[in-house]
Image 1 (cartoon, one colour):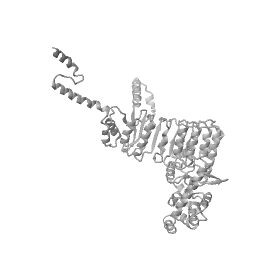
Image 2 (spheres, one colour):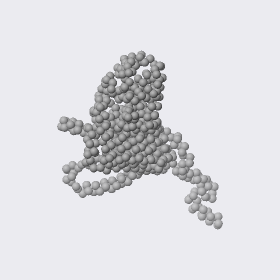
Image 3 (cartoon, one colour):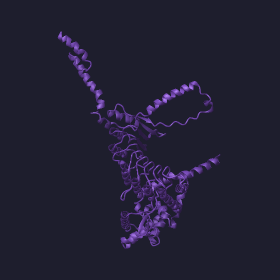
Image 4 (cartoon, one colour):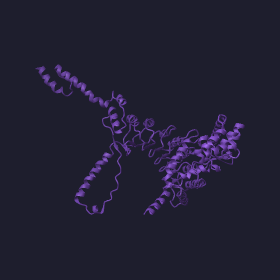
Length: 560
């Protein structure tokens, strides 16, 4: 009886754990159940699964690859890959529709409002939004907003993003990045396609403010947005050093957005120091920060002729000596006159420059000091004379590699009359046409990527001091909603006046001409301030957008 009582007592308990039965056959079933249960439990644990993602071969379809890699990594609930929603066009009801506000329409509007509320909740659900190419539906941009991107997710991205051959931009908005995950993300970028040029990390404040790692010398990022990251003066110092130092310079970054941060006067000074020797950045936004007059003065000063520091003068002298020694070592190995004849047949411009260089060193010494200097150093080898000549010569930069002279002839050889045919090509490309603004910007980037150290740019000597012409490459500067007063405006007025005069003197030449757009609105001065009005009047004819509007209006009027 006791055995029979224990059997019924055991039998109801047996199905629950699936392990206890009295008969041998039932124990086998229990063993089988024990083997089946771990199969379902092991999926989220992932003790043996991490090897499987390595074995998976990505197909290049982000939706499929991401879902499969997440499943293999043990995720049961993961964000879905969806097309980026487009804003709905504004609905303009017609007259016939506006005349009939029926009950059916009211009921329909009520149901639509419920659907809209539900759609809003769906919108905030974690997703990976993608922008697709219209032709082949390949992923062009990736948008991730509002959910934490962990180390494991970045590991999955490192496998499924490289096959995306048309990927151009990655946008991460409030994804809870840390300094560690940022390092992992930066290591992921070189694995992606060469078309990836834009990175946006907004709303991701980091304790160490290590955003400057995105601007390393080997970085290929052209457009970087770091808005709303609580970047202060310490972070701005790191970013300024990433733009340029005495011995290094970022040559790929074209636009940098530092809006809505906590950058003050000291931080603006660090950014200005980075602009001293940077000749790649075209677009800079420091809007909605804490910059006052001292920071504005430093930013304005770097955009017009500024004095080189003692350290910069010493480094410039070293670079000139190094360049002269390279030219001297190059001269004996080539037949100068034979090469100049062959090049003259192929390119009249090159022939003129080489003939003038070989036969008339005295006449060209004022404008082409480095090459004439190399000829003289072959005879005398005196480095002191080289520095003296470089003071009178105004183009150490453009004369460094001989083969790059034709591409830069319009920039550095303004005073040579034979060079005018090359400058004639400048207006032909549409220097006065506003629609060619972006093309010219890309050409400037191409030139800056090949240019030598900016310390070898033409300089001016005044009272024993060396002055550089200033940064003329930066085209767009946004300083809206800071704390600049009329004192800072005076400095920007002097800068704009200088650049306007400079652009007039180079009206037929190609190359950087300075700011085309300067935004100083919503600062601590009256909009009717005379200084601000003068700045606007000087910038109006330079802004390609404001110039294009009257032309569009003229075309519309003529067409009608």
